Length: 120
Image (cartoon, rainbow, N blue to C red):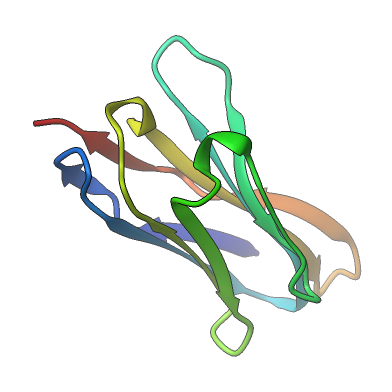
C-alpha cells in the first residue's frame, strides 16, 4: 500500500508565499518522477511542475520565475515553494508520483489534495 500525503496549503494574501509538501509512504522500492498539479473550480486539472529522479525540472509557463520544485529522496518527499502568489493561483493542489511498489509494478499514485487560497 502506497500513500501520498500533501500538506502546507492555506490562505495567503496576494504576493505572499507558501510551501507545499508531499510525502510518499508505504511499501515500495523506489520513487521516480514526481509532479504537482492543480485544479481550480470549474477548470480542468493542470500540470504545475515536475521533477524527475535525476533532478530534471519542468514548469508550466504560468508559474515560471515564481514557483520552485525540489525533492528529498531520503524523505521520499517533494516540495513546491510558491512565491509571488496571485489570486489566479487559488486551487486544490495535488501531487503525484511514479512509485515502484513492492509488488514489483510501477504505478502513478495521487495525493488527496491541499487547498491553496490567495485572497486579500
